[in-house]
Amino acid sequence: QTSHDHLLETKKKEAMRFGLRTFLAATATFHTYISNNYRVNAFIVKHQHQQNPSFSIIREKNDIVPSLASYSSSSRKRVKTTTKVLKGTSLQVATSPIPPTYSKDSKKKLQNSSERYICEYGENPTDDDTDEDMKVGILLLNLGAPGELDDVEGFLYNLFADRDIIPFFKGVFAPLQKYFAKYVSKNRAPKSAAAYESIGGSPLLKYTNLQADLLTKALQTQHGIESKAYVGMRYWYPFTEQALDDIRRDNINALVILPLYPHFSTTTSGSSLRVLQEEFSKRMDWYGPQRMRHTVVPSWYEREGYLKSMSTLINTELETFSKEELDMGKGERHILFSAHGVPNAVIEAGDPYKGHIEECVKLITQYLPGEDEGVYVHLSYQSRVGPIEWLRPYTDFVLPELGEQGVKNIVVVPISFVSDNLETLEEIGIEYRELAEESGIVNWRRCDALNTDPMFINDMADMVMDALNEPMQSVTEACIANNVADVELNPIEENSGVMGGNKNLIVDENGVIVSQDAAAEAEKLNGRVAILGVVLTILVEALSGKSLPELFGFAG
Image (cartoon, rainbow, N blue to C red; front, top):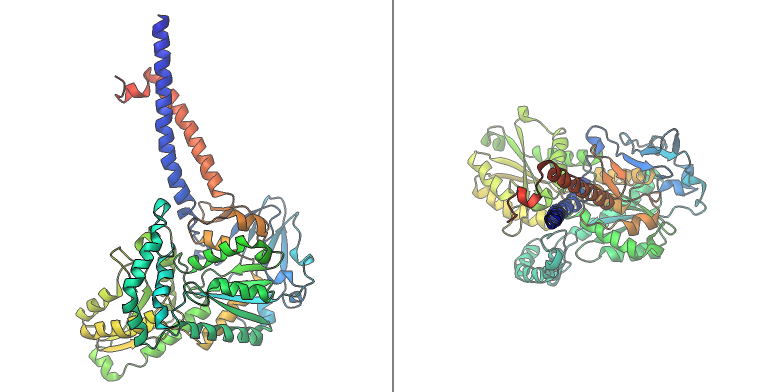
């Protein structure tokens, strides 16, 4: 009997171990899901301005969400900063302007800046560190383009070696990406070089430099703000790292980071912000809060000035169709918004780009003639590479379909570009025009990119001014809020103090960023699930009188 009891006890222990191992294996899988999805996919902020234009962040007590302008004593002469103490609660909310104003009277505009909330025990940042005047810098981020035809292969290598552009080489396969990039760039370089040659080289850097120059002038004229603009390209000179060196040498202490992509994508803005975050975390002595504070404008496709600038250019093209062309098209004019595509896998991982593009097209359409006036709007995606699935519908598929439907008059709008480049001048202006004409669309118009459009430049100045006076958003927060994967938070958030020393961030069920650590929460959740599994194992065995292997037929 004693031997039988011992054997039974041994079997029970073995069953317990088996059940625990089985459950822990499932928990490990669950942990991978949590780490990848809770840390990454769940970070997609359901921006509160879907119902409310403000961007809400719940922060713990003692967190302060200042503006860049609040750190300068001289700027307080121009900026009216309102602070409000939240009593009787351990949480506080920081809001952005609702909505931003666009008054030409800068004093009136600034007085309408957002409320700034500080906690009951917090300290107003305008009370210290204000002896030094604000030296404003604006960092314009863009993709870059080869300067000479001989640079094309190197440019393409940098592009395809970026894990944000090609996110498929991970873990043990990560070292293979450089070989992939070398192979693709070498094979694509001749064709790409011919395309650049056909347009006389890319004007992207020229237009970006002009935008930087005009922006600083508009800030001075419209708002009385002295500033210096820097251009940081992701894949060719001048690289972002070079721009940071210039910013450091000029002793900039208030930096507005402005990606020249209206719509956020991890493959564009996210990639550039990742470079910044890595550089900031490596050299906190140069880029930390004691030397420089920064704020990011992660996306700006909803801005009224941008929408009106785009619609004005489109309406100008719509008016160019002659009576004969309108008669040929039965009174119809079609607008095709062509956005740069991204792989479907990027969107499925939580990239907000597709939603931004679709919302932007709807907002611009409000300023355009409607279908009752014979104007029809379409959206497609261009510039796909390789055999994988990209965002649909493809521009080179849509144009023949429109031709089959009898469309004769079309305006193609490069929706995701603010400067003309290879994709607008060669791909749209040459390749797609030929395809359209072959498909029977004989009256072709291509809308220019915004380039140096005065309304656009003036709105950029307003955007920078808003960024100076709104609660700061760090590079790390911008990455997390827009779902940039694998962001290392601690070096920035714990050391910089830019956001009042707040912890790593997660998003709650309402889409609000909560001041907690996602990985810690995932581990806590996993631990609780594991404990629950053990309890359930014991309960099942107690009720059934059998071990888990016996229940599932594993015992001999």
